[in-house]
Length: 322
Image (cartoon, rainbow, N blue to C red; front, top):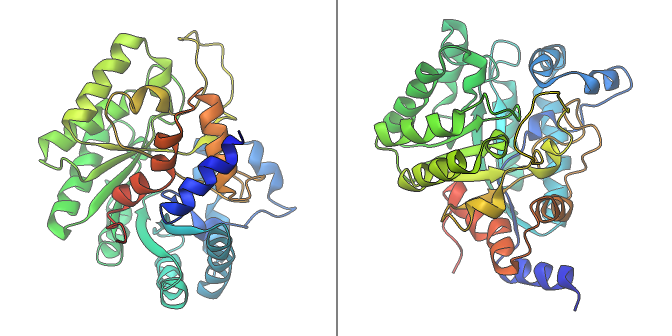
């Protein structure tokens, strides 16, 4: 038996890969001058990309997005979702590039865009660009850690914007691999509070694995009640920095092996491609699935195929082709 061939054949039979989470407007921005920034911590990188963003042009962003998109198409992807930076540094240039991409390549692959709020949404200047993006995206994107101390307010703003504009919500949560983080739980509670069941997706959730089993199971049950989906981006997080903090024995991968049996819809994505966040990532979807299944010791072929295909369509709000 060749299990890889079995999985790939089933993925093709299901219409092809679905890459639910990427940052294609930053793809291929790595160069000799900024390569050393790859060693920086995540919160530092949130600011280090500012110079690149200020210098970016619509045509330059578009060309890089085309390269990444054509890679997805060559791999047999049927759909993809990507966050698009919109803030005072990049303004709306990346959004313009994304819509140009949809005009030229939208017949080859389904696309869904989410706004990346790398400056938060609480600050008035950041809120201006967030509001401007809402009629240009398919998904409201969130990053509550950027509004540290005001995470609930951040999520309230996202949820209300999504309801007002009939949009889905995708939120980066629990990214620092520590049991101090409980953002997945908070997101699930806010989903229920706002009546957004079935319309919210938690992206990454790696800190869940650092918590004791009892807490993990409580959060899975809460996520199930919220009908909240989950996206895993395996290679983006397997490299998480070690610390001296004691925690449950785990790795820094979304605990897919527990979430699927708990009844949660799990999809996956590449996250960053060849930039200071992930300098060696080439956007290979089989690599992502392989890292996930090995790190989670999860070999359920049928569910792996769903994670790579139909679950992704659901998470992006795309109806499967008949």
